[in-house]
Length: 152
Image (cartoon, rainbow, N blue to C red; front, side, top):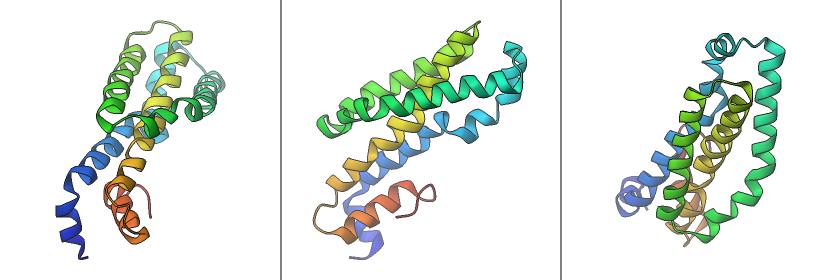
């Protein structure tokens, strides 16, 4: 099946997966790291303290993700999006409004969990749903939704 025909036939799934992948950048290391200097100065943190906060948030989200991630397999894309989009918005708001390092740690945890984790994870089963007929279609769907973020 030519690639453009595939995109036409699966446009809804590929577009949804692409949008979710695109908005996952709010929890990505490169996005948070670009603001690290401003965050450290705002909270009066040294490099080690910021690293500790970032490590705690990242590891906690990594331990939580397998337990929370099962909703991706059990719920529809719409329901998952209705959970993770407001959660990511709340995490970003907490990051902006928190006056203390404890709130910053929670914000990093939530940004990493919902941005990096759930936004990146949620398109995966849906890409498969649009391409169950063969492994080749599944690979094409996966690479279309995440390019150039992740190779097939």
